Image: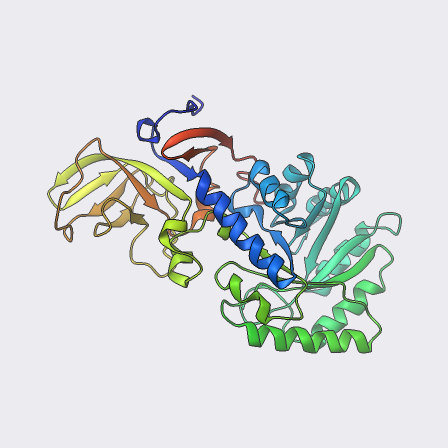
Length: 360
């Protein structure tokens, strides 16, 4: 049975659990970040992994963004089919099937990828030819301890290897930094630029990223563009980081109280299949806006257990609907087929999450 919602319907009458997204907050988030990027003279490339919806990406481009960022080839395919023509995939692409899909994607649209090893470069080299070369950026670990080469010297070695491959084009550097590590990131990137320049290699793009310390991007003058995804909806973790306020969180998961087994415990219909199990340093699984003293302390697949013992006033009753600000909004988008947008609590549209499940 497909999920349905009528334009103008009160979101309080929707079947739950369902993500409900405030149109006005989304528009405000897009405008706020793009205004900052324009002010500091930096290109902005939104990461669509947060929403996975072409119409939202179009709104981001209409506001002034230069292109989009995807995380996987299959995700990029959805947006290429929707007409997007400047896509950066910030992931090491490995394996014959993925390389074949990337080759087809590169014939269809302008696409760039990132690498951090000679193994990844070798696979790309065997796949691409000078007739339609692939743009390649080197991922640098500037402190986040995820992917990326560990030093400017390693970046130079890979850049030279890319430049020597006829089917590849060295297009720059990329980093996903540790939040609030701008000085450390700038030092790494600036040193790498010196090495590249000394070797006669042009570095047209330095792609910096992340939402948590986005408004410090101007402190990394070597960067030419910024990538961010979560900012478009925001979430509880972004509010804690200081990026936004709780009222800037556009996505809530609407849920229903389905049981009150004891005075101090409520059960909601949003379990791990409706709320992310990501704690991200919190000790509960989301903030209930109507009952901020309550804690979602446990998730099974279809149930969430809410501890009400700290609530001093009214407590929720069976059948009551509540809104939950998720700890991590991006994961929610991959749990549902559709999301409901609203303005003032009235449904404005029902959007299919076009790239849902595109994780390979």
